[in-house]
Length: 75
Image (cartoon, rainbow, N blue to C red; front, top):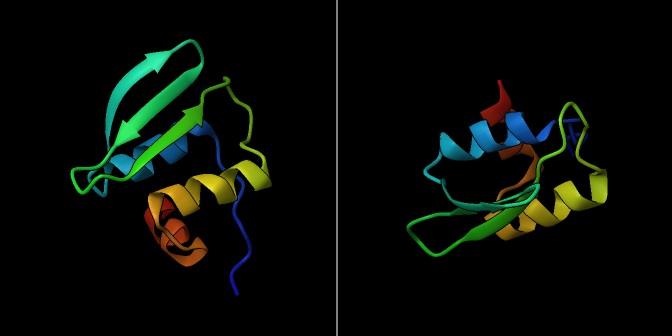
């Protein structure tokens, strides 16, 4: 099993956009992204801060991605 990478919100948003997610709205420090097949994720955007492991796992579940798929998107 792959180790969960440390990513910032900017890196994660960029990776999700590459697979078809689009930013729907931003309210405060939270960005809501939506995919045409109905998947929706919310990402907290705090400058230069790494997203916590638990929250990253929740975002991956919402986006229906595995750790391995995320690692591939980040490369």
